[in-house]
Amino acid sequence: MALVFAAIAPHGGLAVAEACTPDEMRIAHSTRAGMEELGRAFAATRPEVVVVATPHNVHISGAFAVVVAARVTGSLDGTPQPVELDVPGDVQLAWNLLETLIADGLPAVGVSFGSNDPSTAVAPMDWGVLIPLWFMGGRQKPPLPLVVMAPARDLSAADHVRAGAAVATAAAASGRRVAFIASADHGHAHRADGPYGYHLNARVYDDLVVDLVGGDKLAGLVDIPVSLVEEAKADSWWQMLMLLGATGEGWRGRLISYEAPTYFGMLTAAYLPSSPHPGGGASRRDPTSPPGGEVKTNLGTSSRPRKRTRPRTRAR
Image 1 (cartoon, rainbow, N blue to C red):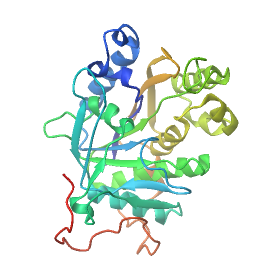
Image 2: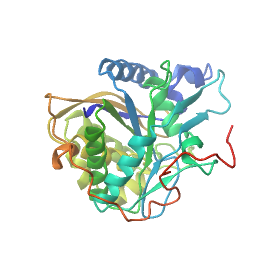
Image 3: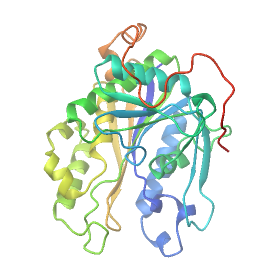
Image 4: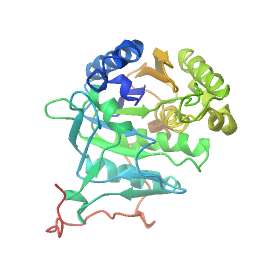
């Protein structure tokens, strides 16, 4: 199969009703409704695995990161009700994605946590993953398997588009129905009393993103100056560029909601293929062919296990 669904989803705690205090429930209504709508659109496409690009996991200088651990778990702190997830990692798709990135000439590393054997390792789940999964696959019974990847802010916009195309290629080669979520909050400088202070370009950046997403003109992301992203204190640009590369031609986007109820902007949008054989990254390579032959590049902090071995340590 291939990618069957994609989304831009926020990761602020205000998006989750169970995480909100009574005062917080008085704001961010559009975002919570948007997340519920995203969840329904996601479920309608019947994904079998979810890939989430998050800005709040590991930060690797000069390289994309792909989590290759067998499980990913996490929780939100200080919430009125428990908000926690424990989901299986899709180890095979994670390794195939990593090898596809490297075969495409992109710097990428595999990361794991705890156990020295990635097949028994449990990686921490950051809020950039947990909050979108709360609505899209994480609370299914059983939860959908997951691949977590992290952008590399010191790489170019073009590199992030190519990384998204690698997601589509790996999805097409997997034989399964895959969803891709760009976990993204936008300008973080909307209010002077926020942790990042105020900058007028937070509004400029968010208005531009709303225009591009609402007009289904996501290709315009590549023209946004890095200086504008930095002044807006956004953490969305890189993941949206990956979504652009993963979808490309043959997809249609729909803006569901946008608001900035506090110091940062939150947006929900759904993307669906407009034909049975959409364009996007997967069309740039024959999905039935191997991702470039034997990969000799160092895969980073974790290497693919050749056989199952008894772990020397065990994460609980």
